[in-house]
Length: 131
Length: 256
Image 1 (cartoon, chains in turn blue, yellow):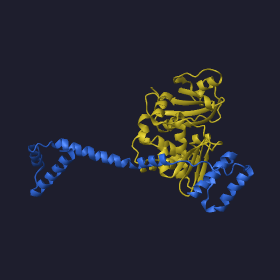
Image 2: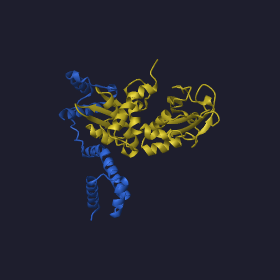
Image 3: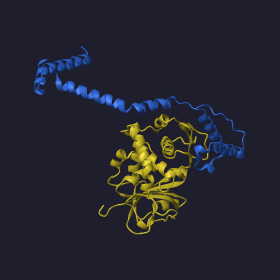
């Protein structure tokens, strides 16, 4: 007989016992022992299983987040802005900011961005807008 | 009165703790900042960035975190991701471009200090880190072990250590014979002034004068680092790629 079936039978037996009359803990232990059932071992198994389920539940979000991270794939760069010079890149960025003042997005340390940084910034914004 | 470092970092630490609680984090190996970022639709991209260490660009939901392509050291990458995550949670209307200097700001009353406090809390959660912060003798050896355990940079770990230890400790970053910045722990005073020229009473000063650095902490006169008496223990290491000396100072309690 599988352990799970055995445990189920044991729980059924306990419930049946409870329905008949309200036995004391000692009576229950004694009766189960008489049936050849190891009560401490059974309780230890229940305890371990409860902990296992709790731990599994606790780490569920992290597990799904890890899967999400693994599944994410960066698309190839669009390179749409590769031919723009510094002035054109800044103008394009400023235009976007002006077009969406509610977003109130501003870039910390904007002045430190190189032209290549500005290009990927515009590409990233395009990609995020498509989402 | 200007806010203290502790006050400046408070919001960052609280947000960091909230994130750990959201993920129900209980152990060091459960701290996966890339997965945490993915949960909030933040993509991590290598490259496409040359003028800074990291950058967060926001979208309507989520965003893109870029890390400079030549940063391959996993601990530094982890810190940058955690720092940008900090901006994401703390500064809703801001995209961020973060230079190296921003990643060591802990005192300035701006967003960078908050993002650093957030990153420190997420990567080195106080309940997991603090129990290791009161060794018999603080040194960079102790900090290095912690950095290995928490997969964090030596600099970030030392700053966290100094923040949480009861010992009178400080960290100092020096370049070209001068103190570039210093961070004192709550029991270390007086402060090591920014811009102070290192003298040859200190091993860091000796190093800039051409002497090798000792491998272990050594006792030096207080005047090596601060105005005022009392001996200090100095443990310095050289970061070749940054041409900088990083120092942990410790003032033992009387009787130690």
